[in-house]
Length: 177
Length: 200
Image 1 (cartoon, chains in turn orange, purple):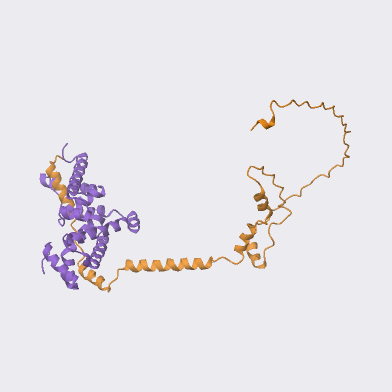
Image 2 (cartoon, each protein chain N blue to C red):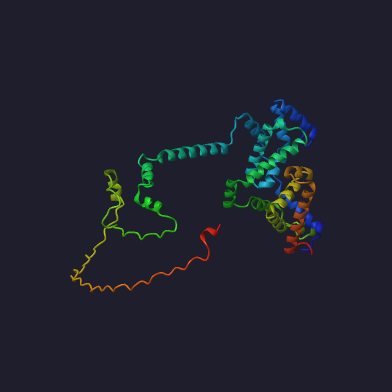
């Protein structure tokens, strides 16, 4: 379709006019005046106020529920005291020292925690892992006894050490200063 | 005071009365300027409901700041600046953005409604130029213009705002307003040409 620039401009004007052919609500003035007097509050204000109040209550409840128990803080402090052997050993070690090999852990034989008190028994039961169906016992052959027979140790005599020959210094020590 | 023509002197007199506590005078100011404020908000937001909210917010804010109005500019320009800031706040609001992502583009939605009202055209030259199809293309193109260009084009085409008022509203020089309006038209012309309208 062949159109001049003027035709196109007219078409644009018409499109814009029709897009902007809108009128405000008839009761705009009444609503504005009512808002000034505080008689009419828009629902969005109440929504925000209610949402803020609910959020504040939730935060307060969470803070109260998560208040630290009396045993937690001392536990942390005790772990960090210098009397702890591991920490004391680390503190005494100088930078650059070789890290000593860690002693073998005895997880299977030494319990890390004391048994849970009565109140925790129900939780422990609920979280218990079901036992495996069947595990065959390990069979370890009895060690054979062997006598220790060390080889004979022969100590060779030291060779004679020759006398040290020290040459005299080229200048007198008092002449250095 | 009667009449709805934008007469700065009448507005100024009403402002003085309202500053002295005359709510009826402020009501008259609302009545005289509500269409201009509404169309400005609508140009920014493309939603009748959002524009209504902005109109109310803008007038309430203007009432509360009325004592700070010194008359450096016309009341209408001052009021439109407040309304435009409110509209921009709403345009940037997260809740509105989320609402629009799950609904249609408001301008495009309304554009489709208006196209339905355009009478069927016969193949005479003038009517063919502004056929429903061309108008539909144009509305879609306008709705997808960059915001800075679209704002100025719609404000200027609303029949309510002069270039000076638009400059005051957007806090930009009048020359920039004119350039943006011209650039918007240039972009639209180029797109129309690509669609087979106009000429190269």
